[in-house]
Image 1: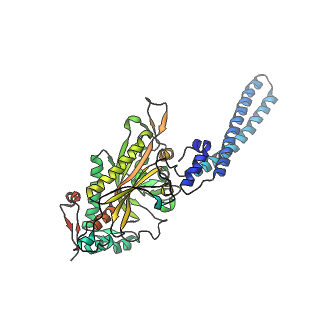
Image 2: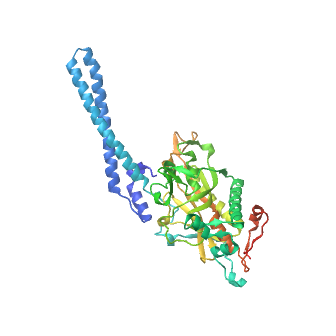
Image 3: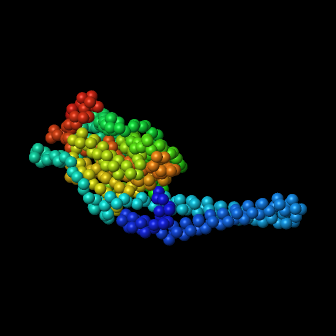
Amino acid sequence: MLDIKLVRENPEALDAAMANRQGSWDRERFFALDEERRSVISQVEDLQATRNAESKKIGALMKEGKREEAEAAKEAVRKVNEQIEGLAERRSELDAEVADFMARIPNIPCEATPVGKDENENPERRRVGEPRDFAAEGFEPKAHWDLGAETGILDFDRGAKLSGARFTVLSGAGATLDRALQNFFLNTHISRGFKEFIPPVIVNREIMYGTGQLPKFEDDAYHTGEDQFLIPTAEVALTNLHAGEVLDASQLPMRYTAGTPCFREEAGSAGRDTRGIIRQHQFTKVEMVKFARPEESDAELESMVAEAEFILQQLGLPYRVISLCTGDLGFSARQTYDIEVWLPSYNAYKEISSCSNCGDFQARRANIKYRDPENFKGTRFVHTLNGSGLPTGRTMAAIMENYQNADGSITVPEVLRPYMGGLEKIEPMA
């Protein structure tokens, strides 16, 4: 959530930011609500002063024996209280309207975010690794959904039978590979300074609100009850671990990680990546979350991207890093890098990790502050960051396609073999 004072005092900055995001905001409605709210607050304060003055008169008048005047003062106080109650009700309504209005405004992109209309204008930062030349090896590569069926490690039909479209059963070496990936990701992050958590996968409404999933993305979330949801990412739970807290500056930066199942309705993605395991309603993902001082957060974003890249480098998968432009930036982010892995079935790079600096946007919603008495008085909002490190499903698809062999087998990357009992190849079914 943006600072309401910033919006009130510098609406031109928000005009420019929303234009760069290829959107807009209702400036007229904001100022109408804000001015009425401030007017109501001022009226209540004036009435409270009047009531206090009249209340003081009552005792003095009673002592002087001026009973009629005292009763008149009491009546005046009663009428003022009625006015205050009516205004308090309107104040409550306006507070709710302003809060809802502010909750629907996305974050302002930072200066490092390139200006662009959509994903086609996302600049590429670097490429690492060369896609494999299957033609030179004399065979046509298969898509992971075909390899999965032929090796028996992905069962789309039984997934659909159990739960419907975009659910998949992993079996045998497929299940082992998924588990191996999660353990490899977590062990790597832990060895490099991250603290592991296993959070609940069901969270309350205010927790989803805290990271910006609500109210904007409610249709994409799985409801388990009126006010509870299955998490779309561990970011939601990890970030809100410190909701309503004041951290000590000496604790920052804090680096957290968790591997969890994630659940997404994908209401807005009909027709996209419907084959295979690229876009599923349920998937496992290892997430990275950071809490940092504002002056540290840019460097922490760069190191988070490097962390996800390190995983891909260890797996030997070719990838590229792009900067999301303003027109493609996520709701809560001020800056985002996407890492895209090479998938032969698409003959293209596909997103496998998204790392974002949200500034104080989420911290304002979740009320996460820090105290640094040596450098300033009071408290400030922390900056929060999040990134995939990595999803097991998309990584599995990339391994299957990039490590496939002419005979239909799939070579297991060396770094994963200790997690898979030494297995070197996943063979096709006889």
